[in-house]
Amino acid sequence: MKIINHGRWVPYKPSKPPGIFPAWVSYFRRESDDQDWYDYIYREEGGRVAVRDFLKDAVSIKCAAIFHPVFDDYIIGPAVTDITMICPINQYVFEVTGYTGSDTPQDYFGGRVFDPGALKIKHRPEPPPQEAGPEMTELLKRIEALEGRKP
Image (cartoon, rainbow, N blue to C red):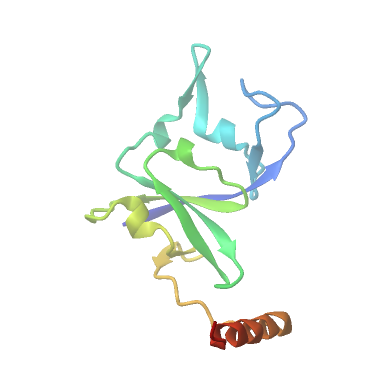
């Protein structure tokens, strides 16, 4: 499999909406070069919007990964063949070519870890155990006491 990183996309407010998109749309720009998301994935064709040719490949998988503080990693959310199904707010968008697995793209890629620096995908580790705070500890004790009572 080959991974193509399309960058990390963040929200912004354009001074003038790009292309033929209305001002009420949520806008995203690529962090590295300020490329607008809609200008990147769409083109105007005879007054209509069309997906750019290089993103039309129905065989490649388009994924988005968002930073998850519990895992201290980027976790893959959507894994689709249609890039227009991704809303990239604060996420890396990348493309995987050459996937030949029998699982659906979402079943295979969803929930895995994406390393944007190394362009690697790996299994997500188990989350670290979390201790209950003092309020939760007190609540758990009260529940245990209630459940221990007989009617």
